[in-house]
Length: 168
Image (cartoon, rainbow, N blue to C red; front, side, top):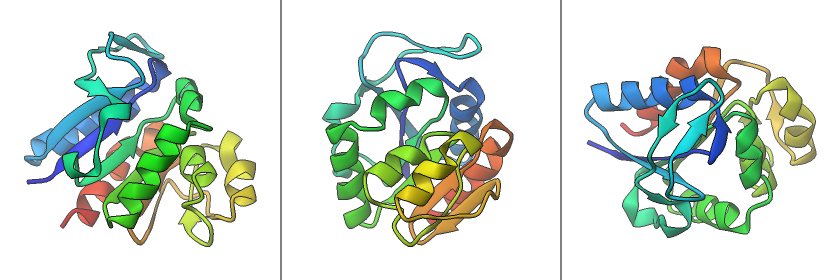
């Protein structure tokens, strides 16, 4: 089965946007690697505590088949990160699944990956996506080529299913 790298913020990642997709991925036989900007315990908005497997700066495209950025207010630490942008661009160029949920699609937009693509995001990120050239839809989940975006926690399981669909 596939290897899925999930990148979470060190604080204030959205618990269910990490936990629900991870549960779906594991239930379907996929391997999950959790990465963050540090390797200490990361804390979710609602109290989830997660020990990352590695620093996201150490991820290489050979490590995964899909790269998922988890949302929540803390994901803004990656909005303008050259490391995140390079990793995403490399993954996209190598035809890996690139995905983000909630406010995290802003990272994809600022990395230049959503130009001309259908995408969705938590409403606060709408203007950022449009500025980056995305065709914002407002749908719970959007798939365009190898890019999957979700608009928030209520779409977390549907988002996970869309990521897995692209891995087939």
